[in-house]
Amino acid sequence: MKYYRLGGSGLKVSALGLGTNSFGGRADEQTSVNIIHTAIENGMTFIDTANIYTQTESERIIGLALEGKRHEVVLATKAGLVKGEGPNQRGSSRYHLMLELENSLKRLRTDYVDLYQIHTFDPETPLEETLRALDDMVRSGKVRYIGASNYAAWELMKAIGISQREGLNRYISTQVSYSLADRTPERELVPLCLDQGVGIIPYFPLAGGILTGKYTSAEQAPAGSRADKEPRFVRLLSEDKLEFGRKISRIAAELGVSSSVLSLAWLMHKPAVSSVIVGVTSVGQLTDNLQSTALALDEATLAELDRLSDTYRNGEPFAVYRLP
Image 1 (cartoon, one colour):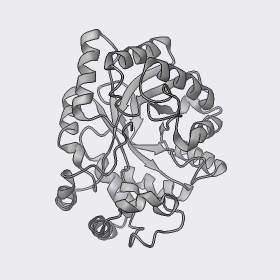
Image 2 (cartoon, rainbow, N blue to C red):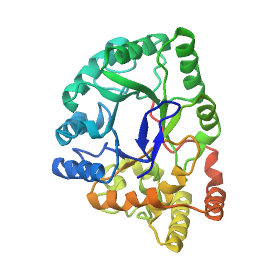
Image 3 (cartoon, rainbow, N blue to C red):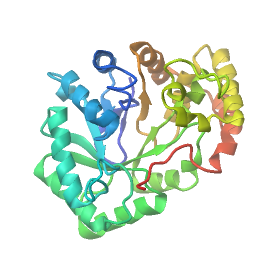
């Protein structure tokens, strides 16, 4: 396993991180526990979750699986998206964040999280309020580092500026949809992160499965796939992306690896990327994806992948989560 610094901090994380939004949903409890244990056994140290994943089941299952193993991982969770119907059950106010951190700690069966992330930008809460609340969390020892998610480049830079001005702990990372099928972060976010020492943690690195080669058409989703379990996902299966997925599959076949492994390895070669989050629903999927950490891509292959995916630098992101 390879390990990289998370942004400009001294914290090191595994190049491949474990995404857990399927735990307690598309992956049942025992399967999820087995996945976590297999990940740890193979050197994966970064585990990412959120307070809303599978109605809090993801955090609960992670807490169960990490009994006696908490010290072996860098544990990250998030808050800020809609948690309930109440007026204070969303966003990044001090009120909401403090409450959600305490609830997450209980479910995770730990007294601290290594990385606490704001799930999305909150236009109704002053950034000063959010950043001071996060700074207090770090000073209390309940949070080690802080990160952002789904922030536009200008929002992230504004937050960094406020932290520097006020002497507050600053974001060391940001999560964003980033893959061969979504290179929109390269327009503004990647240059910002390289300049400011912020580590990028890509989510949807396989474009929701498009880059696995398992989708042949939008109408015939494999049983158990995201498109099968989440019908709204089908709208993202455009013909151009399906054809692009087939092209990536052909290159992967020439290299003797799966499309998933090739797509993950490409991201690991990208500047500013610290850890690539991959969500799995079986130990077999995880075992296959682990091969990406050992795949070294030569300049010719990287250039070809960049050329084929260049069109996805423009247009809309594959996914972005914002408050309604």
